[in-house]
Amino acid sequence: MRAQIGKETVFTSPAPVSRGDILRYVRATTDPNPLFQDEEFARTTRYGGLIAPPNMVCDLTYNIAAEVAEDGFFFEGIAMPEAFGVPLRGEHEYEFFEPLRPGYVVTSRRRIADIFEKWGTTGRLVFVISEISYTNQRGELLGINRETLIYQLGREERK
Amino acid sequence: MMAASFESINIGDELPPLNKHIVHVEIMMYQAVTWDFTRVHYDREFVTRTMGLPNVFVDGQMLGAFLSQALTQWLGLAGRPRKLRYRFRDFVYPGDTITCKGKVTAKYVKDGEKLVDCEMWMENQKGELMVAPATATVVFY
Image (cartoon, rainbow over all chains, first blue to last red; front, side, top):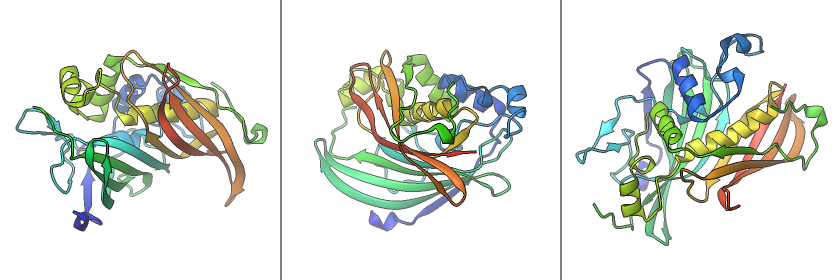
């Protein structure tokens, strides 16, 4: 399992991020900030136009070809070492660079930084720490996301 | 929206708290726009049966979006978040009210940039910790 450390997956979104995506994200998170939704207002600021809220570049699943498993339910299409089931999120560490803007085609580079086991109250836990960088079509760095996912292998899943 | 300025900030200053009432449909909106259809965020029967939880729960990144919003609400046009780190403690459910809180822990100039560090956390309506510890760095223009 630890042999997966260092493994990299590169994925370029098949579609640019749209103003609609940003407006939907802003609506879902009930963000009143005009910088993220009012193009006329945003043009008067240093940004020169509407930008996405900072976390959005790290939050989007750019692979719209979402996988459906044999049981008919969604599973992450990202390259994971084994089929561990659906993880819980443990922690995120974001770093923000150039703001995400409508029209950007995002490439994400995911590298597995660490994998380790712990024993918790629910049994065997596997921690997978990945580092993902997000760039636009010009190669400009938009964000970095160091995410910890926790797979609960010790829990018996009743189907 | 509060418009902070680097000059006026003091260590120990509290960020204006941000309250969010959690609505099931808005959880679904978040899943839709991030294209993440993980079952535990919409299928109550599944999550109660397999995880023993009372209801579907909010995706952790949506909680992170609320923390970020607390920062951008405080900054206005005076600056921008540079870093945000946050760890999950407990589950947030539809019908809950969460509050994002923060406190300034450092203020400094580095490589010509005006930076402020904050400690942040999120509580639910019972005062239970939902997200902690969390830290942020913002840059002022």
